[in-house]
Amino acid sequence: MKVFGELKPSVADSLHSIVTRTSGLRVSRDGKARSSTPFPKSTDLELALKPLLLADGFQHHVSLQHPRLEVGFEYDFWRELDGMAIEVMGYRADDEVYKDILKFHVHLGTRIGVVLVPRWKWISERRTEANAKATLKALAFADSFLSVEALVAIAYDWTETEEEGVWALRHCDIEAD
Image (cartoon, rainbow, N blue to C red):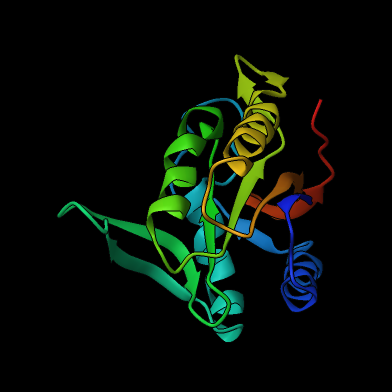
């Protein structure tokens, strides 16, 4: 977990608890893989996380309005109690993370923005660090101008299980360059 900004001890404890309790979470892939890397999609992970995060006081797919425009957007998970938003990123995190970071900024109630990001991006059966590196770079830039207390990147990867089409969630360390 990489934190930009300051986390209150209660929020840090909550995030560490989520990471601990979701480590090894079994996730099935819904539908056929679009490539030779048949990992679960971000929506698969989101649905697997849903019962645990709902039990922790989060809401799923919360619809929000831009404060100045009549444009709607939503968070994957939102907890009003501490103003924590969680976005579950998929294999295109390096391209999509900027949009999610801006959502953290425009919603006035958001104090903590969390992105769950795949450690690797797989292209033509080769893994690259594009997702993790782009996410950390974006969060580091955003930390200097966003109106939130902290931005958090939690990297994940998959471990194959003995059950076909089922993967175990594995959290990874990532560091900024």
